[in-house]
Amino acid sequence: MGPGGFYHPSNRNGAKLRLHMMCFGRLWDPVTKYEKSYRSDGSAPPPLPYEFISLAENAIQDAQVHGLPSTLPDICVANLYSIYDRLGLHQDCDEHVGGLDRGLPVVSISIGNSAEFLYGHTRDENTLEKVLLESGDVLIFGGKSRLIFHGVKKILSDSGPSQLFQETLLKGGRLNLTLKHH
Image (tube, rainbow, N blue to C red):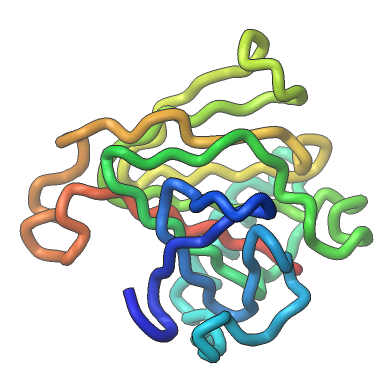
């Protein structure tokens, strides 16, 4: 937390989201989308680490058997969750129309506590699928499923690797790295 680090974003109505966020490569936030280059604290996002790009690239290549178009991410939205946080249903639809039309994939990497992840083609919670995302899981959605509705319903307490929590500053939370091409 602090200049250039994780911050507590607000939605269009001014309500705070139930997570902390920071971006690498490009700036994105729930209100201005990709319009600004600097956060409200005046800081620019740090460069996207090569290791993040490599993780996403390898995951996409491994999934090519499913017909996903190839792309290199230029942004990482890092969401940090406590066990009390969640993320409502939404679509990742603020990227360039050409990339959305091509179904360029979104790569999501889970680290820390497990999360109940909801997804589907509508906002109707009765029709949504639920999957448990555990530490180390990689989820990719692209192609015809690029614009699925998705969200984090719940973070499961004490479900992550204890060694990870002992050796890092994560301290029982969940970190999600969402990599995509603007």
